[in-house]
Image (cartoon, rainbow, N blue to C red; front, side, top):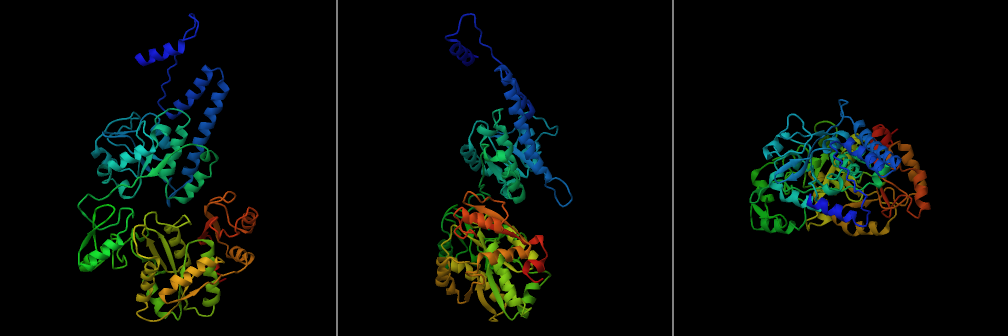
Length: 538
């Protein structure tokens, strides 16, 4: 009251004695209550039409968000709903109340009810046991009055409390700007709803692409960031690489192995990590996706998410398919595959040249990807999409996770991957070449000839310096959808279909028609056509 009286006193200065300062109290409890306040304030200011316009635009944009997420269905035709727990405070824990539940529900998600069976929309305090029992799919830390950095910092500090949650184990804990997008009942709550949707469907590329395609998303301010929760307690031995690679661990591991040690201290986290010696002593793959697994992650079920060493992510259709095909093959080639148009064109070129004359020909795909994000560098393509490509084409796929915090050279990392094929051949000399989808960049080819050639195999470039017009025609003939997955230039956007028109447009804008200078990258959706057509066999 004292602050209000002081404010009124300041506002009243210079006013006539008979003039009165009017105070209007607005107390919205729901998201639509907030929208109604836009009209109420506009009426007070004498511009009711402007308030109605703002409300209509606000509601329309919320509905646009809702339309996108409710179109996404699971295999049973049900909406892909996520259970969301939003922390308005961490110590002690409070969930979000008032309009927050509406914001969660309007983007097709459900409110994880921690200790509240009746579903009250008031913010409430609960225990951490209540939090664990609610078992949310996604956790948002958007504490009242705090910006993104503060909420991220507090979430990391609360790792010991958050780590038992399934959401933390699945890397689905996010920090948001609570002050900007959640605490204040105004138009910027739209940004909060957008942040909820973006975090809830993070990793679902179709939904994310649709969300980012909304016009208002480009002008709406909202902030969110995934929080790296330490999943292991200090002093325990790290059997799974749940922490991001930052500092070099390869030298530490090598030194430990040279001294016959079972563990070494990770230079970034301080955790104790099992060495390859310890794993060999165990005698088998434990299935956890360990950093130094010497068994090619044989027993890991979710290899796309967990492997830390090169391993086969797809071995062909049917049990023992890879072993049988390698045994029968006269010629085996390994193609460095990114999932994009260039390496896809290389597949088609290799099949035209070799498979037509030798049906025993085996082509193995090799894909490197970031060990933390599980995406392919520059392409912004998740390794799951490459597995989907390999499965549809029925081509064996080796995944090679690249560690940011390792001094192991690229060539040595690739050597590990190639050795997987050599082991499957039981010493038979059938690998005739390593293949690349390079088009015309001389410096890249020169580097490969200098470094990758050290592996001792011939290097092959099946589409080197072929005319772009021929390459575009081959893509059209394949019937596969080629979509832009990443772009660094204005004029080509993520989600654009790559075709002759886009290639020519890029050239007119001063880019390489195939984005070879890093202007844009792509994903080949080969699964939209039959396998034979995608491979050029029909």
